[in-house]
Length: 113
Ligand code: 5GP
Ligand code: ZN
Image 1: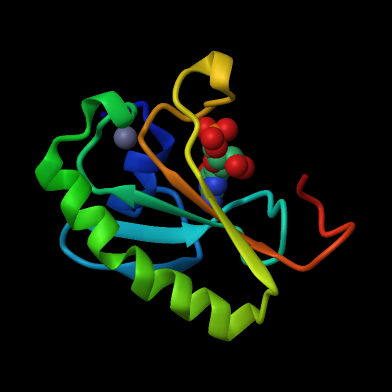
Image 2 (image 1 turned 90 degrees about the vertical axis):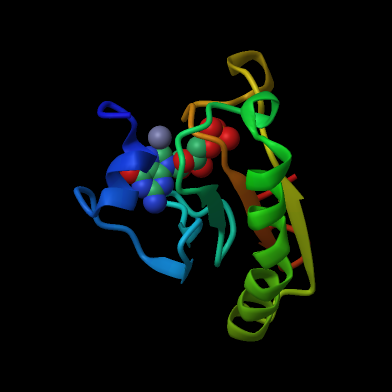
């Protein structure tokens, strides 16, 4: 989608710090790091939210999530990690291209919760 910021990142029109990439999935650091290592995992096809994800797309995305979380754990050495996904403006979604947030946790005062 031409006016989608995440599609622009996929196409290389907007730079992003890539954490993982394959044919179907891209993971990159969130521009405003809620916690250190805050990462977004997205499908390369434009799907607005969880309701639009097909089982095939979901499979491709979630299949590589353990690999991505392990890499983040090794790099940032968090003591915990939250995975979350906002669907709909009322639920806090601000970019309407499906994304899974990976939030490394570092204890009290780490910026989240
Ligand atoms: P949401 O609120 O939709 O669940 O999350 C959208 C996330 O995308 C936010 O955490 C926001 O900081 C991040 N974001 C928005 N624009 C950009 C951008 O241009 N680059 C990167 N790397 N992250 C972005
Ligand atoms: Zn998009």
